[in-house]
Image 1 (spheres, chains in turn purple, yellow):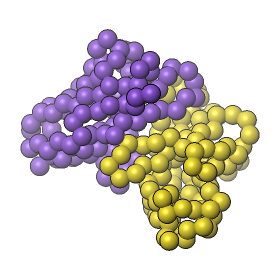
Image 2 (cartoon, chains in turn orange, purple):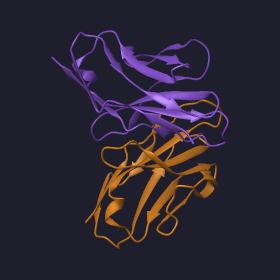
Image 3 (cartoon, one colour):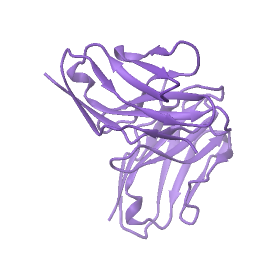
Length: 114
Length: 115
């Protein structure tokens, strides 16, 4: 089965510019997550979707970050405007809805803000 | 709030020796516990999980982990380390009492296996 796809793999932008990341989860996975992994730290949840509804976005900096999951499949995460501290790897993960099931992660997008 | 602590930034072990990567957690109620491994420039790969039942769980690549409720620990173990096991390991927890399915991760432990 195909894994979680993410693009681009790498992105370099200047501060105050905008950037968007794309994620295609594993087919049939209703739950989709975006995590931010800063160098030297574990991933931190930004937003969780179930189908196309938001379950948890309590840690999403909503003044600059936005995310959507149209039609309950692909998802896009946007940052506008970017700050230096947004430099990180952005990981997308998906899982089935049933309790206790593991999440499957994509390869991530490494963002560098200069 | 739930949290995970991985007290060692790095663990060094010689190939063929047993390895242990430590993890303790804090969560309301009973936990779901996970171990993931991350190789350079790649996403996280699932290794194993504890949901309920036997305290010793076996996972991929010969890894196992022991759940200890009284010590709130979930240490990752392998009887004989391989050089190819060198990677970054993350412990993660999710509480059963919350509707959130997102995981809370530790800060990671780098495992270095020397030939």
